[in-house]
Image 1 (cartoon, rainbow over the protein chains, first blue to last red):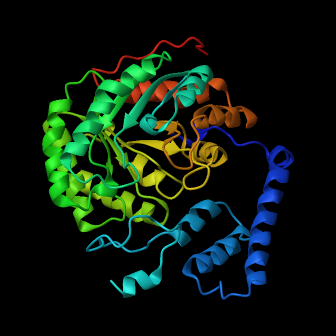
Image 2 (image 1 turned 180 degrees about the vertical axis):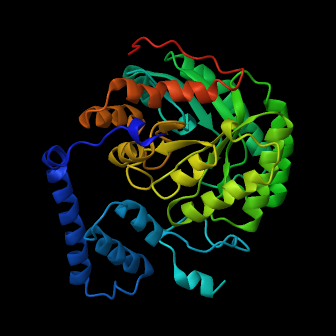
Length: 103
Length: 273
């Protein structure tokens, strides 16, 4: 599809007016989740999923478009070779670098 | 707005869901074979499931004025067990002449293992041997990018594979480009958490256009929303997009893709835009 035939997004001011409140809510939810983890007293930062999430949060403040795609790749398995056998039935949301070391 | 639900596992949904979908304008459903949430132990179990998809479920849908189609396979979640997969693949051909069978699906990969890839290739070979269309499941979450790339490579190893007759479903921001650039159709699956939201789906349409793209709910026994496609239409309107564009994605594109199967009968819309 050519650039001209792609549907145009809302103008920025209209998009902010329409979507600000719900995204304010989402950011506060993430902040409260991290506060909850801190209050738990445990070492949550060493969990590979949370390490990926913290990196992803950093992307939110970066300039330029493509944040969603960059965050997707932070969570993604970057390897190419198929696994020799099934390790677990379900995905967990973030790639565990340790899983490759043990493979 | 009338719509076609391209991916719904109605065997795990209630009669109330059928009622709501009919009220919202759902005219047809395509139901891929999937994982029941636990592993079936025998090929006989799949025979029963395929009979449910080809005999029972179409009648259940018809009570609500919804046309029911299906795709048959052993789902990627069970693809690691090669002996079982081979046994199931051998049984599929006897169902392919059923009036509501559109092709082979949803095949694909789960954790991207060697065995899963071999089982996937067995299904692709079966589809091509019987001139069937193909519906593909791409892996979840962290496995999606690697798995989508592996699926495309495996498909392209078949010289007689026509990408125009293959849909690679569950695309997201990081996979849609490789799918569309290689000539395949794709679906954006609207999930509460683990795939794309309606807002992100509209974003993806704004960035990549609507050619060879549809949306689906993939409603099943997990966290999923049978009303997801109408909610996508609402989000399109919220962004100011024309109803004709929304209709292309939820009606015209599904008919264009599915219409390549001679058994697919385009439903009649009561609300043409």
